[in-house]
Image (cartoon, rainbow, N blue to C red; front, side, top):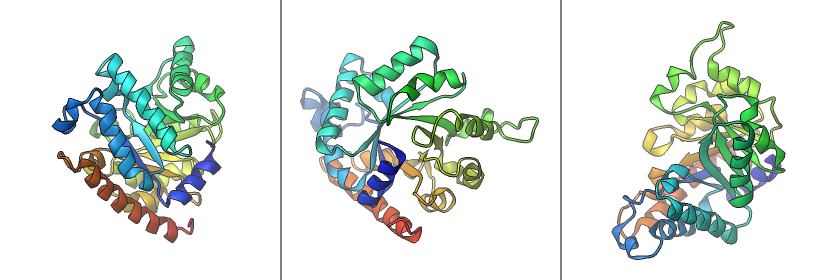
Amino acid sequence: MNAGQLTELIKKKKSFLCVGLDTDIQRIPQFLHNGNDPVFEFNKRIIDATLPYAAAYKPNLAFYESLGAKGWESLRKTTEYLRTKEKEIFIIADAKRGDIGNTSAMYARTFFEVFDFDAVTLSPYMGFDTVEPFLQYEDKWVIILGLTSNKSASDFEELPLQNGQRLYEKVLETASQWGTRNQIMFVAGATQAKAFGQIRKIVPGHFLLVPGIGAQGGSLGEVAAQGMNSNCGLLVNSSRGIIYASGGKDFAEKAAEQALSIQQKMKRLLREKGIL
């Protein structure tokens, strides 16, 4: 899926919502534990409930890796189920890998060939070697950590350089040259919305993956005001605020209500921007 197709998907859904599948086995409603694969059953019901309102899904791999081989199987079934439900859906592996050489090439093969993800999150700390193997895949994306939502992002990402730039600004500037706007996206946390104006000066046309609304306290309106471009250019993620809206048997229905509420706000923002 290239940038134009992603924009068309957003227009079709009237939404730039990404649902984060941070599926914690300890938070899944107890009645699902009677089945053979409670993680997949939970994901399946969340997907069925939220698919009308979401343009993307983002499984966080840590929650699957923590369960060993069974977790990887749940992940495989989740991605395959998404493809059967709606072929034109954007699926992100929230993996935050960041290695080089043959190791990086094997990660690329894992996420783009074995699992057929559309995109994978990467740490750019080791430079271009980190992302090069991923760029060999047509219509696949790397999502590079730029300015993240966590409190200690300031430890490194906001450090001033000798030329007056912040470190995250140098990352955006340099990494944006590694590939095209059809290949590279950046993570920009919703709690950092005050910096979105500067981010857009550096990468005006790139898509941004924006975590941090909902449970982390970021403002959708502020993100859109500062970060939306003429093609939308945003995928805004909500995880816990949607998938754990209820811990009971109505968890899927409550997830749908939360996703619909966000989608309705996004539809209004897209219309205000003249995208719809």
